[in-house]
Length: 333
Image 1 (cartoon, helix red, strand yellow):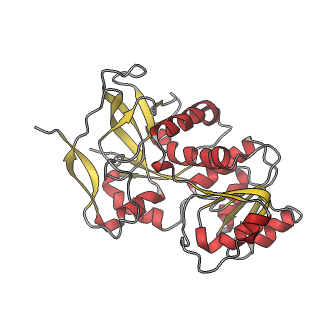
Image 2 (cartoon, rainbow, N blue to C red):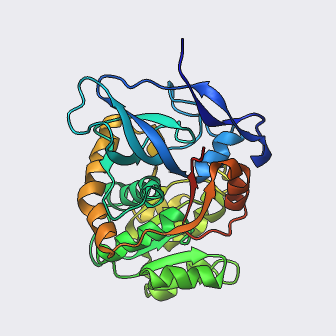
Image 3 (cartoon, rainbow, N blue to C red):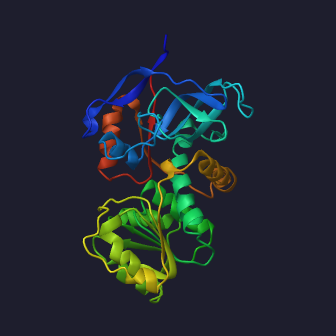
C-alpha cells in the first residue's frame, strides 16, 4: 500500500484560489537520497507561473510546487554517508517542496547552521543560488566592475546586491518602482537606486558611469527593457536574462550593439540545470555564502511568514509585489 502525505496541490489553475491542501503519495528516497520531513518552505515567482500552467517543469520532476525547503531527515538511502536521521537540513530541489515530505540528493542537501531557524534556512537556497550563478558563473563579475541589477528589491536582487558588494564591484546600480525599496537596496550595499517609474534607467546609467556603461546586467524584465539594456552595457558587457516579466517577444530591435560592443547575452534557468551543475553551485554557496549569512556580513531577508493553511493568502501577497525579501511558509499540523 502506498504511503501518503499532505501537500499543496493546484486544484484549478489560473489564480491563487485554486490552491488547496490534499493527500498525495509520499516519496521514497533513492540510494543516495534523504527523505526530509519539511518544516518550512519558501515561495518563488516560478511557483505562480507553474500554478497557472505557464512554467513547464523538467521531465520526471514532481508536479507539486516549490523548490526550496528546510526540515529534518526522516530516512536515508543505503548509500548516504554524510547525513543521518534527525539531522536538520535545507536545500534546493527540482520540485515538491510544498509538502510534508520531499527527497533530495545528499550531495545537494546542506546542514542548517545552529544559529538558524527552519524558516531562515528555507529562505536561503533559490535566491542565493540564482544570484551567485547570475553574477559569477554567467556574468563573471570581478572587482572594480559596474553592475546593473533590475528588480533590486526582489529576493534575488537583494542577494545579488550583497554578493556584488562582497566582490567589491564599483557601481552597484539597482532599479525598483518605489523609493522605500530603493532605500532598502542602498542599505544593503547598492550605490545607486533608479526609480523606473520616474527616471530613464538608460540615461541614469550613462550618467553614473560617465558614458561607459555597466560591465554586467542581471535582468528579469525581458522585451520591455531589451533596447535600453543593450544601450546600458559597456564594450564587452555581459547580460544574463532570468525572466521575462514584460514579455519575451521583440517586435522590433536594433541588434547592432551586440556586434559593435562585443556583448555577451545568456539566458539561465537554474531549475533546468543538471544535478552535477547544481552540486557545483551548492558547494560555492556552502563555502562562500553561508559563512557570511552566519556571521551577519550577508543579510538574510525574510519579508513575511505564513502557515501553509494560508497558502492562498501567501500567493496573493507575492502577486501584490509588496514584498522586499522572501516569503516563507511553515507546514502546520
